[in-house]
Image 1 (cartoon, rainbow, N blue to C red):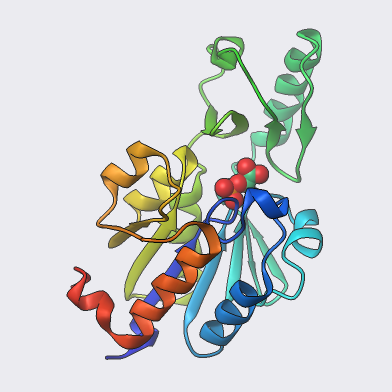
Image 2: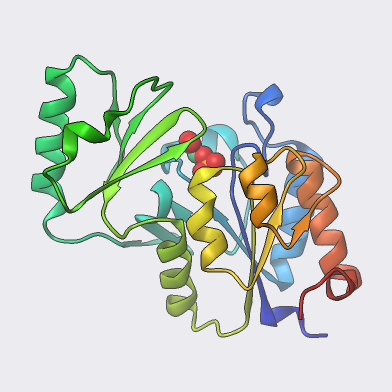
Length: 229
Ligand SMILES: O=C(O)COP(=O)(O)O
């Protein structure tokens, strides 16, 4: 078995990190990922912005990051933007519309993020065809159309020149595109029902303990018995 033929693409919130720890990575999970990443490809693929890395994932050293739900790719501190040219103007227009509705939102470098959204805000942008709205439980990310975690990990693999198999692991709606781009789909035990139904493998454990379980399966070769071909 050659582990460099495998790339693990992992979601962050409720996959690597646990809500009970306010999403700060646990030491054992950090150590496991760092050790794995020394000889293998491990990519964190998250809706989060760059500014959260030091706060929540301090000391985590994966092969690289796909941030802002696919819009920003980071390998060895080099950053690649995965966005169309039209986006800055469009983003300004979206911000104006959200402010007019008195909705609270934050700007990332690329995305617009809203926490705890209770209504369907898609109607606000129905005339803007180049916009996509992605959910993560009750949070919303407004993105350029076609930019998502799946597209982000494909670009990452292209930059790396990686041609092997992608194992995706996640828990919620914005991981669907990541699953679609993967050769093998893994759900942590705390994943939403629809994500577990899509998965090739549902882990026995939750959050970061699930990641440790998955990396153990890969390192021992058991992942092949569990369905990876
Ligand atoms: O919603 C976020 O802030 C990020 O979440 P994710 O790591 O689950 O994509």
